[in-house]
Length: 427
Image 1 (tube, rainbow, N blue to C red):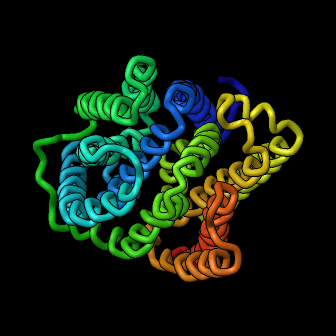
Image 2: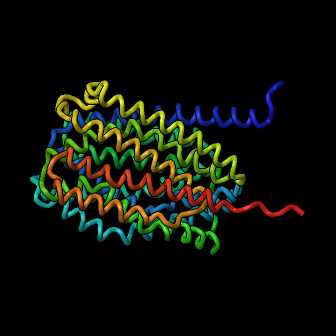
Image 3: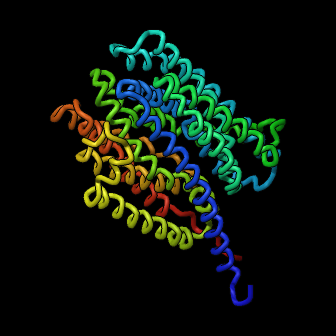
């Protein structure tokens, strides 16, 4: 276009790409949110608590099987460009690592599942079925995450939309079965079917970008291990830390509190659409920056956007709480006190996740374990002084590590900037 410089044309291209991505993922998020809220409204409180525990177990298993593997594919795959064979080798290496981690995590998963479900009133048969469904969901989900990382790397907004809609539409169309069979088993079974269709869609769509017959190289395998190993302590910690509130409430046997916690944190799904932009735009773009000033300029824009969004969201919890709680239905209108904490945790999660994405985009994964001590110490002090018996207590407990995580990521990012490699001398 006349009058438009090349840098401006590039910026407009990124804006258009980000806009298309956000529109597509906004639709996907809307579909998934609608399906999730249908589950909240259709299941009785005790069955929704059961469903919440099942989804907590899915999260634990996926975390254990994918401790940064998909992020490693994005960061290291950026060097391969459009080389289908090299990308295929990298993905095959990542899948091999994830499958081994899944197998190693299964015994621990079974023990945690038994402890969480013990003492509640659901039948033994239903508990066994839920554990089997959850294990299958973890097995199906992890390969999809790794293949999806290639779509993020290639900025393939169409592919990401198709994968997301494959899962979301299945859930949205089949969740009404809970009218006939209002149980956690029904809802989780629908979720498993949606994950399977998403996996099939993702693997089919990535055929053009991934040579699935390629063999991984020793350099690729070693590179993934070097990226992942520093993340292992924080990944194991995060697998339990992110679900600590549900775990504690499951141990004390408060079924209604589990349901309330699961319902109010559903509102976080509305905020989580922002996290979808991290591997698609933030990580690949920041990974390609070689100039410190350009890196800092992009970082400043990201931080400013997060500050404005956080202010608006948290203010809405005080100005118009009824708007948020209406979404959850009649059974959960008593959660006005819990709402600001929930939204604050959601925005802090987005902030911490964004800073983490920027840090690892520089291929810097060391130091992530720093978050463990302040998080655990803060939670232990809170639990000892206050106790954890209600939904509000559980939400405050989850807020402590979110704050610690964001602060640690900020500190690590400062270190990345200070240790930015100097340009080689010319001549």
